[in-house]
Length: 490
Image (cartoon, rainbow, N blue to C red; front, top):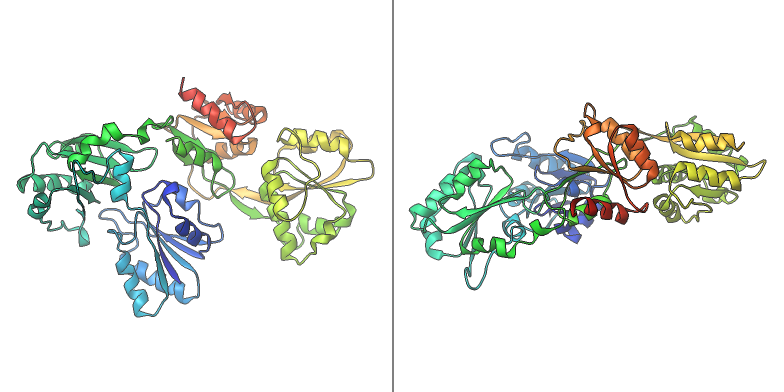
């Protein structure tokens, strides 16, 4: 099965429920250049990801090859998603990609997406139609097959009136506006160009059909951008809502360790912030035969406590015992401790109740609590990341607690270092995210970073790297968002 999924214009909230569901079920995802990082984060870690992105004049993966990949993957019995920006049937070449599938009897489905033609205008405060200004909408592309300019009937468009929307037309904006004027359009007709529509780094420029090309050139407007020509463009300032969001125009980096979607990023984007996430670590489990965790599981009856310091570690542990066919009832004698709410939630999903979680979510507080709970003769198994923070083991050791500190996973960086230039702030939700960010930002001057941290422990780690530190009142995502709003809404 192949599913064409429209990813929408970029804002992850504009991805349809059905489209998101199809992504979660995918074995393979072929995605385009303009699919946002926010939406790419929705792809499950188990799926094969194939970048087939194209830009104007550059086709690293030719269309024929994309079609062939879709056919080959589907023939292998895989669930394939072709993820396309906007809507797959609105200048997305979706129809072309179905031809080879149809010829070969491959089942396919189409999930429409929110088209940038309408959403881009809306996020710029421009209604595509308005009874007082425009009762029709015409959507065109200025980008033809094999990069040739299209033979657009400007005379017919100008006579029809209404709103004209041109997609993929930045490089042809002079021809587009000139063609409208040559066909008799008033050179003072309101017009707009919207770059990076629906995203926190959106820019819009409002002018006339005569002045818009020079405005785009002077401001180095680049794709993706949408051109809107018509009287409705003059409503942009009156109906503007997106740029009035409290964090619009601010660029944030949200430091990540684990892959997937981020609640903090989601909340910041909702406030209009342009969010880049530091590349998450690639998680490599250390569970091969003969590994330390394998040995510990073999002697699980000798432990009284099982401790998790992260959701990743908890999931790695339970996935491993399922993989080796271990009956979870073999853990019935264990008490479970974890470091925070998110880790506790993951443990709860396995049908297991946590016996101890500290009020403050850090390794030191976890260790102090365990030191009081673990009685003489009891042994503790800690299943966590390789090179985990020393606070936990140092305090347990000082309290005379008998424990085994076992690495069940490690983190590696598999992407290029993150660019921190131009970021207004970096948000950190744990000490581990600070340390991972420092590795990800190789060569960057960390003393220039404004760090917004979720607690004292995280802040101390950020200070150790020379960052300017701001601390949330409470150790919650909402509290860190409130701190950021305070910083930029004085």
